[in-house]
Image 1 (cartoon, helix red, strand yellow):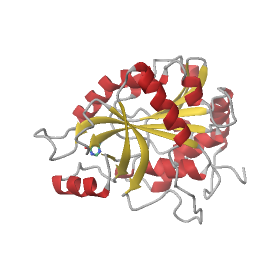
Image 2 (cartoon, helix red, strand yellow):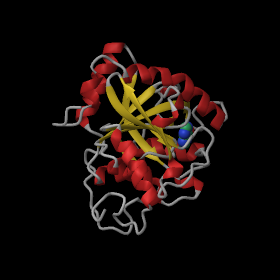
Image 3 (cartoon, rainbow, N blue to C red):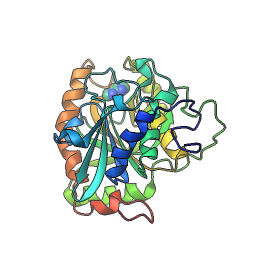
Image 4 (cartoon, rainbow, N blue to C red):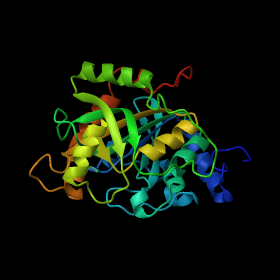
Length: 282
Ligand code: HPA
């Protein structure tokens, strides 16, 4: 364990974690998908033996947000084994940036090489409409923190979101006639939504979408060498860009409706190319 993602900068790992990790490893998946708010329906119900609750891993705090279940589901997309992470840890729940990265460190320990991160986000770009999807080309970390605090891990972030995977998913989206934007995601702490003045500032900074997750997970994933792809489900126009008041229920509802489109993308004919890491055919 001396050099493992779990033990890096972390003092205690319980033995229980190892047996649960073995179950994740047994799936032989190389790809994991973290599901954001309202996107749980991407996973159909599976038998109990295909599920590992986050509570089996001492390092992962319990998610406390409606719409976030807190478990790994060992499933498949087509013939490709995939670990779905249903639920994530957020800063706004009072957890540390290192806690937010725990799910990613467990996935690295389980042998995952490619991480697909999804989230619900508000659209800042007038061309990106609620219910549509945006592939993240880059991010702005406005949380003021990092899961790498306390280490001296100077990870390169110049292509945090793999160009190779973006090109493949872009081609897959065109093939199935799905609208898939590309843009910059700004990650904030939350849990309050933004003010209209903050939204105007974020537009000037060059962000296309805003949310309260993803950026810390991606930093954690890059330092562990994952190939990363990120997808934002645009659940609403950001504050001040429409007359509507923002609500978490609306975010969940729109996420649930848009999930079907994302599933279509993941199941697209040449998805094996999307889900295969460089030089690592699945
Ligand atoms: N702002 C921040 N986070 C979000 C939003 C938003 O408008 N919509 C969904 N998550």
